[in-house]
Image (cartoon, rainbow, N blue to C red; front, side, top):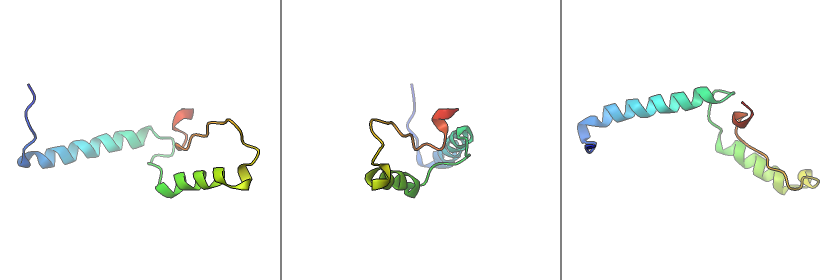
Length: 68
């Protein structure tokens, strides 16, 4: 049976979340999460004339995560 997280457990929860985020970052080839502007830049490129010959392609914007 799980117990509810109470106010005095916030430090424990914060520590756990920091550990989870650190673990996730360490799995990325570039060692960090992507920034919103990086994802936005890919979307802008797809909407531009520069991508006019791109058709039916899946373009991951994941910092190389899927390549590992």
